[in-house]
Image (cartoon, rainbow, N blue to C red; front, side, top):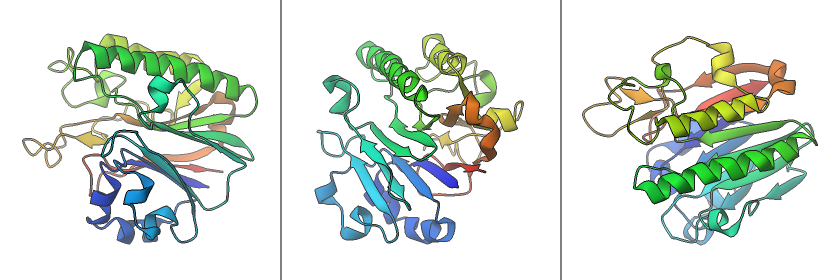
Length: 253
C-alpha cells in the first residue's frame, strides 16, 4: 500500500500546474492533500469524484483558507472530520479515515507565524490532537501525515541558527514533535534516514530558495511504533513541482 501526502497550496492552483499528469502516473492507494483552499462547491467533478477514488473533504468555514482532502481507492470503514472542538473544526484541518489495519489522520497543522495568538492556537491544536490519537491507538495502530508546520531538529532545515526565533522552529513548537514521538509514534523518514541532511519538503518562494535547496522538512509521516516494521519505504519527492511543498510518501508491506 502506497500513501502520498502533499500540501498543494491550493488544489485548484495545483491542477493548473500539471497535477493530473503526475497523479495519473503515481496512482497511490491513498492520497492526502492539505491546504486545499476550496469548498467542495467550488470544485469540478474530477476533484469531487476522482476516477477510481472516494474523496473526502474537510473545508474551512473561511473561503480560500486551509482545508484537507483524503482520496482512497478502497472505501474506508469510517470517515470523521469534526473530531476536535469547534475552535479547531471550523478551520478544516483534519480528515480521519479508518482502514482495516490502521487509522489515518490527514492533518494540516496551524501556522504560528502571524502572532502570539496563532502560536498559542497552534500549540493547543498539537495538544488536542495527540490526545485524540492516543485514544484511537488503543483500538488499532495510527498513521498521521501532513504539514506539521514545524521542523523538528537542526538537520530538518537548511539554516537552523538564523531561524531559532522563527515560528516553525521555536523550542516550544519542536517539543511537541518530541512529545508525539515519546508517546509511541515514530518519524518514518528519520527511522530510514536517521542522519540524512538536505532533505526538505517546503521552500520559500523568495530568493531562489528551492533552486538552492534552502528549505525546511515540515511534512511528516508518523506511525505507531507497533506498525513501524511494516513501513517498507519513506520518501520525500523534491522534484515534483506545483506547490511550495513537495509530496512525501510511505509504502506499507
